[in-house]
Image 1 (cartoon, rainbow, N blue to C red):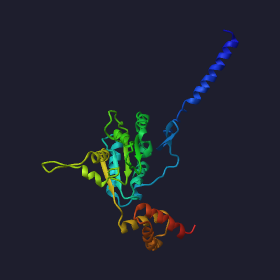
Image 2 (cartoon, one colour):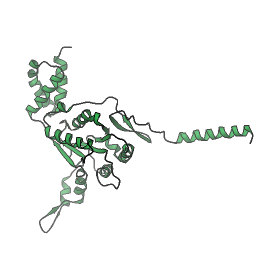
Image 3 (cartoon, helix red, strand yellow):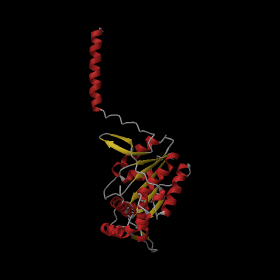
Image 4 (cartoon, rainbow, N blue to C red):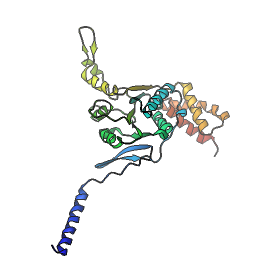
Length: 290
């Protein structure tokens, strides 16, 4: 083969390779393992762990009137970091009462000890097995965080979550836990008609129908359930005053915010930590001179 023929062949091969590369999906970027928080991102045919550049930080001392829930979650997280047995956690209840903030507070407190957070949207739960494989050999301890989790009738992505929690032949690995928040205790809609499927045994026992059993089986795979409740008026005001102090309001002026703080809750129809913080920001901006 002459030099000319070889050059022509090489040129044609390069063109063919170029055409093949155009059809192949791009290689996903490598995770930045120096980060402490990640989001699972998807674009077309590729998916990757995207490091969070600006992490929303909150501290455990900022979360008031949820002491029991805080104690249990912190104890479980410490067990996880110490390579002791630990449970997946489902946090349910009133909106704005600190469920997701409590998870972020665990990251802020224990990131230096190797805790990491991976936020996964409900629509991406089918990729959980890929995430588990990606971090399986890392030395850090990963919490997969699913916020505001619930499933509508007919959605199948909850099956991937069930497998990771407990039910697949493949282990999720000892460096992974799932922390999820939801407004629903059983994560799926429940209907009055499902009660008609219950079976009454001759000995008086009542057995739920298959549909109800299927819905309950998902939440039961979480080893710890934590319930959050709406705050009483005095609890709500305590949280308002806390955030006003954090924002630099003089102590002698904080009491004067009481009436406006209560009016704020009436307009929003909720007494929660989130509402308290929103009010404190608004009140501080209007009353603290720059």
